[in-house]
Picture 1 (cartoon, rainbow over the protein chains, first blue to last red):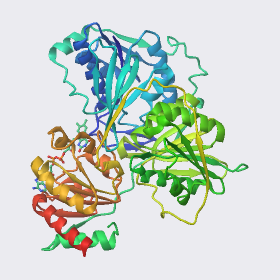
Picture 2 (picture 1 turned 120 degrees about the vertical axis):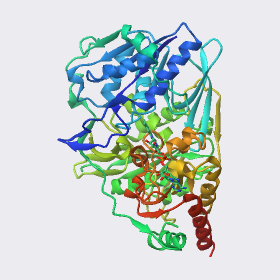
Picture 3 (picture 1 turned 90 degrees about the vertical axis):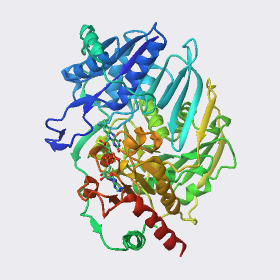
Picture 4 (picture 1 turned 120 degrees about the horizontal axis):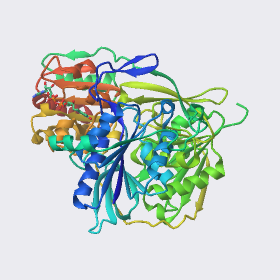
Length: 261
Length: 326
Ligand SMILES: Cc1cc2nc3c(=O)[nH]c(=O)nc-3n(C[C@H](O)[C@H](O)[C@H](O)COP(=O)(O)OP(=O)(O)OC[C@H]3O[C@@H](n4cnc5c(N)ncnc54)[C@H](O)[C@@H]3O)c2cc1C
């Protein structure tokens, strides 16, 4: 089975952020693999362990720093990595990024595509379904379980819905899923994995390798245009309740001042 | 604007009927539409659908599209129905909830039609010359991004639940109701098994009672459930609580969990790590109960109680019960 995992490098979730010159910055904070993409890499590696005739390719689009994240995926057990990089990619919106990823994936054959359910930086949750549409394969999002049949040709796939879950039975490959927490426990790369990763190849593809012309990559084609970024409004300073009857005080406030109940 | 705008609102519903978030979409649509037209699109498998309420909340037209495959949501059938209705109505804007379904559906449609999509918006503006600007949280709410949409119509916009609540129903309001049996392509409809409990989802709850490691153990979540029951609230949790298996993942609030904006968020024994704050700091009113007066959660709390949550929560349950019953 040829498995492709799309991963994104994001700012550490513990980072406190600032806005400078219209950009989000967080000096000194590390860049990490998007936490949901870790579930995708882990799942791919587990599938390979269960079905050894598999190959796991990880793909990431972004600047040079992305190579570190790709190396982590290789250390977790992926077989090869593709870094999609070109200076002209920096200003593109999600719709165009999905098209570029699709072109890169289509350079080779594939059976299963795994993505995270969303990136924890821009929280769009768009890339997975968009990719599936572009690749013309079925998709299931926010997946918490993939149960393959014995011959690894079909799978029962469970996804989270508001208030519960639902399972789609007997989905045939190829398909795309976006991975949610609960799917597995992502491993920490072992020392052996890290050593093995050093020998694995990271292939770089640029705009010309993907036959993308200047017209296609013109940020004027973006459909979503950032006007500005702001920090959330400061919350007004809170009140610490004190005294014997705090429960009564709070209940009264919630009813009479906040009028919530 | 030289032309009146048309807005389609996609009705989200389940076994128990139309979901409240649908009325929020209609409320947001009303603010934008001016004298334009709001069409509510209701995909269902029954002619007995409860569509009337949609007109009370602002729909000028309700299109009830009936097909047996609509006995429950799967994105393929919704996509097919939506594409054909978009073709007919030529809307300028399509509004959907930023639910798990709304997010995947909007992404698929936007890609097929090559139109703009903005996910999980908390504000929408339409300028005189027809430009649409949206505001949406990024980094799970650590920042807000203001964006303009461009390109061919319709613009697809999903709205965060609980933000666009309006005045409620106006039962004197009327609208046109069109019911039609539609045809759908044959989907290789894989058996779909849905297990949805009676439990209120945290993203849809008006009030949330949330517990952290300070609750000491899974058995003490009973105290939170009792309080939640009195308040009609959902129970949520911090990540380590979920990682310890005390609560299901669907209850995790934070940057790698659910993002919630209820009217009231009661945080019990939660320290207030940035990843947790990211998921809940846009709640209207925040109450924090923590034994450590220096806990970061107090920096976002409107009301704080310094003390043992295990003692205070039952007192709150009693007190709320008393005033709600009295
Ligand atoms: C990649 C990544 C993603 C993450 N995503 C999330 C996320 O989505 N959501 C999330 O919540 N966290 C997330 N975290 C974890 C986060 O950093 C914190 O570790 C976590 O939020 C802490 O949970 P807590 O407040 O329950 O526990 P603690 O930080 O241990 O706090 C417990 C609190 O309880 C108080 N306390 C103790 N006993 C009592 C008592 N009897 N009564 C009252 N108070 C008491 C203590 O004073 C303390 O403040 C993430 C971390 C990483 C690295």
